[in-house]
Image (cartoon, rainbow, N blue to C red):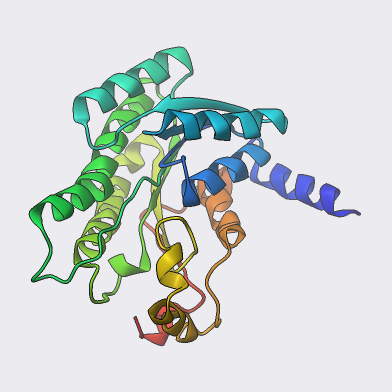
Length: 265
């Protein structure tokens, strides 16, 4: 059996062919990768973010590879435009089976120095944005009588702490708790809600830090002695998106090379 056959067998195992997935924050980093991963597994993917040009490039990549992708310009922290865009999505493309709440930003500042504008921006995207997108999409699922899977992208910093990233850590801790609340209240609608808490993965947002002396010291403390590869997230993403995890809800799963269990942030 060759590698291509192995990949096809794995994709068939998760039974995601024809499922409609919405990925926020898809214009770069984890979201870009998640969109490709879900498309390769057979999903039709709505790629959402604020940057139209990046979305068009991503959609073109997926479509030219034999997948199906639809760009959706979406500002997760603007409630009115967010609701309008998601309403148009539902009527023109369909109600998603899978929602990946991935949009996120970070601002580096110690607590005493953090500005209101930076803090508000981080909370607005990472916490309020997840609430607003989830509320709208989950209402669409309920109205359509459609079971669903929601995957919130949290962080190990939502489960522990590190200096200089207070607003980010607080916002991701809120995502973890929101995951629990949604799981509890939406289970009766057959909507499962889980979270992935990545450790350190090199993306546009943290590339400079991870390549700095301070970043290299952080990676040295990871038991696996490396930063994560984006492909390290594929298995848990496809599991939580699929019916193979149909009895899992309210879970937050760290993917961090053992960083949390080492207890050193």
